[in-house]
Length: 354
Image 1 (tube, rainbow, N blue to C red):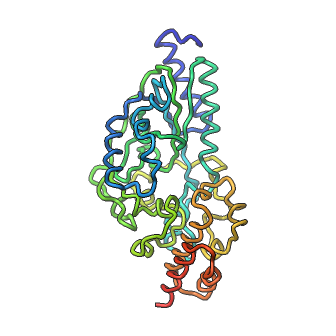
Image 2: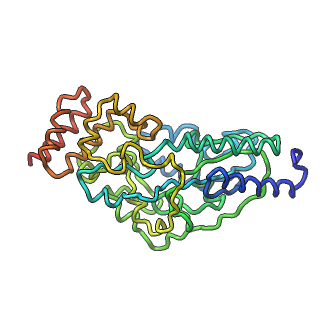
């Protein structure tokens, strides 16, 4: 099959790719072309409004986001793959109701998905090359790729009002990865164009009202952005709305009706580590920098960094019910060398003095 001299050969290979994908633990796979121009226009408008906040990387290599063949010359097709990550005993709603506990987004409680997906994608890419001798390249949040737009075109779902990819079969709790190839594989058609209908649950429950409208997320108000990407002083108006969310926010997924159909993962690496699905805020706040580095090894939480980690927990402790334990924990960081941490600790203590 190395010569791939006919459409039949390419069709056979496409079917094999889908078989190999499932064997490697991927949930769904689809193949699309490189035209994502309509979604690129949506991105341009989003950037013009400044909704990306301080995520300046969204502006870099902008042309490549809308043209996969500019990112990797010669690309003819993109193979889009998803992998479910939600564990069976996910307790997001329960944690949100307990202000003593830390809420950490479901995707971040286990191993960093980038490493796992990249490893599986490379295995799949190697198999493809063995059977075709053609070039390919893998991506997992590692380059200017419009992954949700690509996945939608490849038939993996539709982009919901919360800007996440949704699937009738598995909701939205899944990761995406791509393989760019110069093989002219047969295309898959989009299956689920839009099944949000009149539902606005995701927008209505957003704690900080970060949605300017359907498909319009103002990252500057989004708790995921604030707790992970943003490194500065969090707006005073937003702090009380963050509750106990210290890394990410799942509200727009928890309340999405389509997530009734979530398929739980069997990947051991996605299971929570260090009890991050059931841990007190005070305990996490007392982690030293060394403990943070050790206990977040191989975790997405490393992206926030220790300073933001303490800042986020300080806000959550400010939102918690007053207790001797909470006050003691906050006082232990009152003279922290970081001005950012100190500011948020002082704010938190003020909440308990009122």
